[in-house]
Amino acid sequence: MIKPFIIIPAKGDSKRLVGKNKRTIAGKTLLEHSIEYAQRSKLATTIIVSTEDEVTKTIAEAYGVRVVGRSKDFMGEREVADVYIKIFKEYGHNNFTHVVGIQPDHPDRTIPLDKMLTYAVENKYDDLFTVDPDGIRNGSIRITKAEHVNIGAMSRRVGSMMDDCTNIHSEQDLLKAEKNINERVH
Image 1 (spheres, helix red, strand yellow):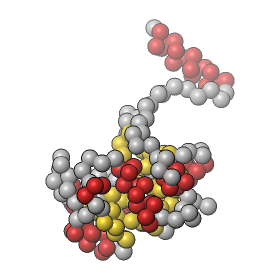
Image 2 (cartoon, one colour; image 1 turned 180 degrees about the horizontal axis):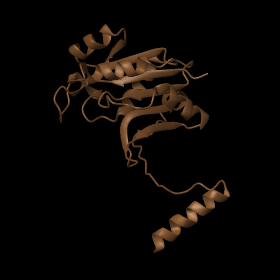
Image 3 (cartoon, one colour; image 1 turned 135 degrees about the horizontal axis):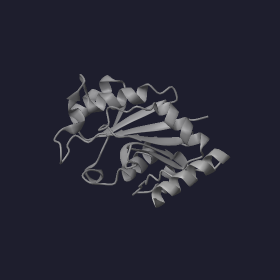
């Protein structure tokens, strides 16, 4: 059974784009888009918004989402993995299978959260994160096994690299790989 503990880290200020999480597009704030995305999950039972900002707190509470404070030592350019670990240790429990971090600054997500969770479990991933079409980690979603977050073994700096190579499982795959090699040589 998949049971995610969802954290939306939503600090009130942003150095590059002031008030970013409270900015409105398509009639809703970035925070609201993220909360609604999380609430569409049929697997989610716990959604927490972490903030130090009163307006952000009011928005989250209007959606019935639990809000937890965020101390100054967990602000600024702090690794978000540290925020996830702190919140999970304080508010999570052993019944959760995964910790899901949803960054508010990606309002146009295309893959449902339940599909990502199922994919992570079926493939036995310890850590799954989203990448853009170029294979670059975009930070939209991060799913980590709760057992790793609980002991603080969550990676602080995670990257990804897209390698459009062929995974050989059939004769067709062999032919495809050979074609790719020949095209690169010539």
